[in-house]
Amino acid sequence: MCTAVILRRPGHAWPLILAANRDEMTGRPWLPPGRHWPDRPETVAGQDQLSGGSWLGVNDHGVVAAVLNRTGSLGPEAGKRSRGELVLDALDHADARDAAEALSEIDPHAFRSFNLVVADDQEAYWLSARNGALRVELHPIPEGVSIITSQDLNEHGAPRTRTFLPKFRAAAAPDPNSGDWAAWESLLATCDEDAVPPFNDTMCIVTDRGYGTVSSSLIALPRHEPGAKVIWRFSAGRPDNVPFESVLPE
Image 1 (cartoon, one colour):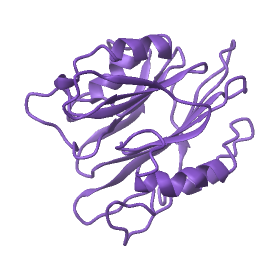
Image 2 (image 1 turned 60 degrees about the horizontal axis):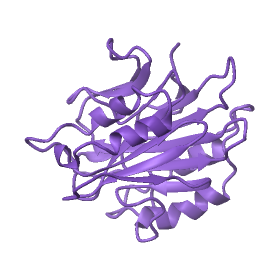
Image 3 (image 1 turned 90 degrees about the vertical axis):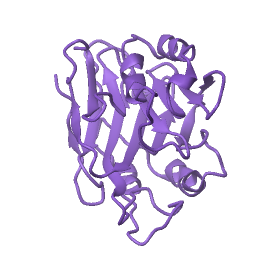
């Protein structure tokens, strides 16, 4: 997955909203979010059928996790574990802090370089394993709107961040109570079929080389209260032509 947008607003009825476009080789098989792992019944996530891991998921405790490749590290590498395992490992935890601290202790050489977002209704973190790094870096995600791509969080030098961070900050935030997601859905679906790398003017990527945006998600975490439920809206394809639908199963 190549772009994640995080809105943090502690104390709000919906303290965290995560929007994400997954950019991948279009022929790589996957399943939409579901309870695909019998040994992890509390986990709901999209499943990458090539590796068995996931790019994005939530658990029944209200933890959300998303993994992104860093620049120059698309695809698997012989001798390295799948980065999709990181999402599942994060979702084995009941809160974001425990998950982030545990995963900050892993050996970064076991994986290709990655960014990992882990959040709940109270806290949010991004973890970075840079190419050749000796350790995984752990950083808090600030309040407000942030964007992370294959580079660092809110990095102005990342073209898509530079273009779209001000647009997401200026747009009306999703309102799960009223069902109004329109402004962010529209931004996620920004698509230019003539765009070329680094795709700075588009969120939804189309290429003629078997690579592009293959799905899109909007996840809202409620304040932890009895009966509160996570909302996950999912576009099972390019969000400019595949509508978002609720996919979170019981």
